[in-house]
Length: 367
Image (cartoon, rainbow, N blue to C red; front, side, top):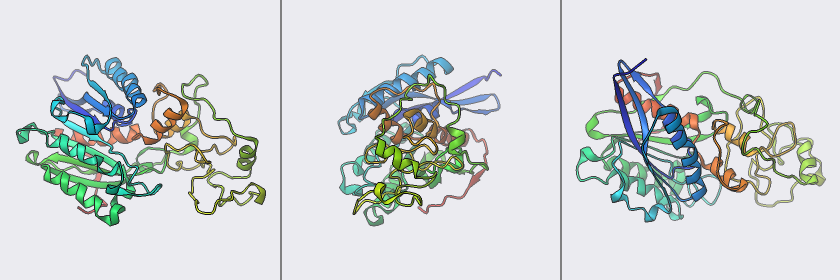
């Protein structure tokens, strides 16, 4: 079908990651009558050079091969604190999964007192970078870990929300269980969506899907020649330890694990240490970790998952090729926003703009 009007939303990304949110946005489209709403990238920024190469190699390729995009978005590799925000091109929508390191329940939980906690403010600066209100981005999507709601004794999150509202946006905030939205992992994330106040729009939280996708389904039939599919070498001791751990178990609760293979660690009892995924359930959360037993582990083959398998759990398509060393790729995958989650949220944003109704639920977080 040929649509008379193609309405394009130009996007900017901060902390873009390798392209989970960018590819998801590129895949999003909404049809309303003779209109088709789509997105296209204007600029993107990330601290990691490998990540920027991955984004450019894949997201830009998809835009050109599948959508006929002929633009030349700026891919800016470098510290956001050195970004010249005033010189960035105008955008309709801003997407920023600001760094979660200081808000995660895994780690020191420094919140605003850490190196990464205050970085959300650069998204606020982009939103406010306009001489006139109507020149501000029409909307934004911000994403972070569930632990952000309790960081700094519960004071950090209200501060972030207040800054976003005071920037001139009507916001909706919800803690998503992404396994309820077609992502084959238990990944719980807070997503904030805002529309510029003068648009008189409010985002509605999309309804969950009815059927969850299991790890076994997600990891089936990976092509033998798939990229980023190299296996990690395990020592004989690790292989033997894994042989006594059943699907869904870790080294702490494995019922069959003999004493000689148990870890002698006094303080650390992270649940994902030598934990196998359960093929009959969505996996546990994919992270950027890898050492000390924090690889994700296959339920039957007594080995760590490959990066391609981890990418499958993050809903990256098999053609998506990550750039950099195996360790760099592992980190990129773990820090990414799942592609399916991005498409879901961006399409809901486009439907809101286009006046297309969709099934929704009440937000589970109060403003």
